Image 1 (tube, rainbow, N blue to C red):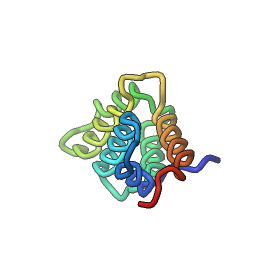
Image 2: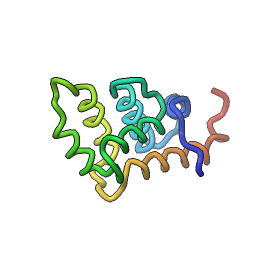
Image 3: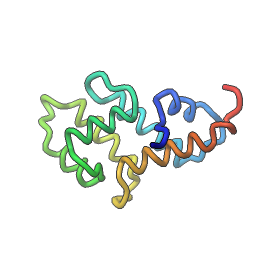
Image 4: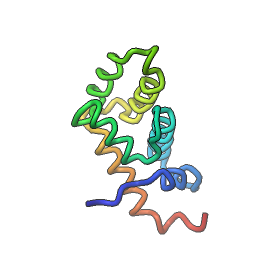
Length: 119
């Protein structure tokens, strides 16, 4: 099993200099979506598991979007907001899953961790 990026790792990517813009944007979107989600969810892996349990696999743009559209905004406004935010992480690429994106961020972080210097 691969190492999975943590919230602390996401924070590191937001403060370190020289991170590619597309990585930075995905990290920022993921962090906002996790913070917006109702309930005690802090880690990207937990967020992914919660969404998989509620929406099912695979977590594609279309599947997340369809689930979000069915939510009652009076009852699930923060959940809908979180899903609205996370949809931006796909950047109009409907061929990838949220799992793929989390794996991409994890791979980037753990491949480049030694290049981040002292924080």
